[in-house]
Image (cartoon, rainbow, N blue to C red; front, side, top):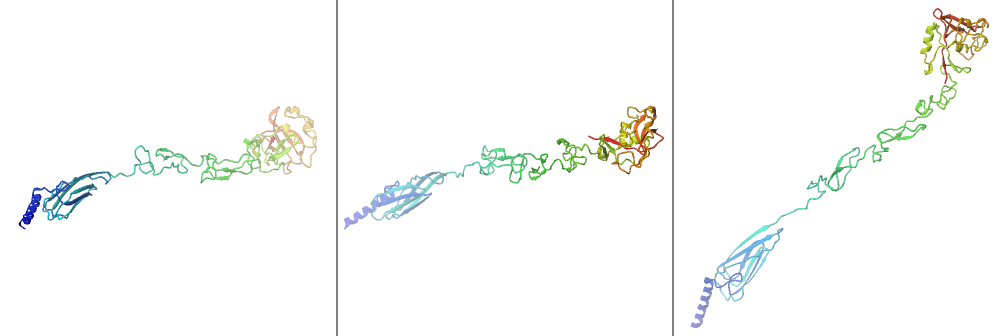
Length: 408
């Protein structure tokens, strides 16, 4: 019995020496004869769980290096010094495993009471990076000249003749244009003939459709023979807007050579005579001024010569053109006037002129522009009441005048 008690005391002493002299450690750096199993798993924290009756100091040193995007491997070094008292039979092996996710746990089996002090030192280095910049992200980056948030090459707004746009590769380029007059029919246009002029219909067309200055289809202005406007550039002499061939302008828009506008045409001479003539009597000089200012029909008129005036005489053969009376443009002296120039024809119930002339005209003396070369103060006249060819004072006498013009 005494021997058994001595053995007990001896074992207790061995246990005490182990605690005081630090002879027992775990695999973590201790020599501990027991069934301590240490597992250290790190996740930036240490937790020690001892179920030993182990009084002492557990010192864990866990140094981790974590590089990356919050993901790394943690290699921990756990050094502990277990000092305490073990009660019981602690026989076994201390096995420690350190797996680094920065989480450590110590698990011991036995009656282990003590204090665990651990330090975990680590450095976390990492960078959070978003998507790389690119053409079309809406931000002008690097070598980009522009970035409008897409990879399309836009066109200029309709109506612009030039503009700068951002193309599919983020470069500033000239945009494609679209406007009235570019020769391409665009959405808002009815037509586009490549200009901003409203053309007319081709000559001769009575109607047509053209492209206007604002690219709309409209009726074109017409120009043709019969439209009432003389288009001399297209060969028209006249255009009275009708197809009547008995008036001044023929249906071919050529002047009617037989028409005497504002007068009467003598088919024998193709002269156009004022008809009716002015009802005012004038001196020779005033008569010449009157005819020179006459613009009837837009033509030039003049006071007739004696030969022209005699061409109007009818039914008096001596004084008609070619009659025995010798007074003409080429023979205007007093000597040219023989007896046949006067008194050959009796007074006539009507005038000695063509019956187609206006009956309202006075049958009386009419001036010629031909002066009497024997006496320049005198001029030759015709009396259509008697058919006579006579001479009269230019200043002392006042007679009628019938102006004349030529036809085409």
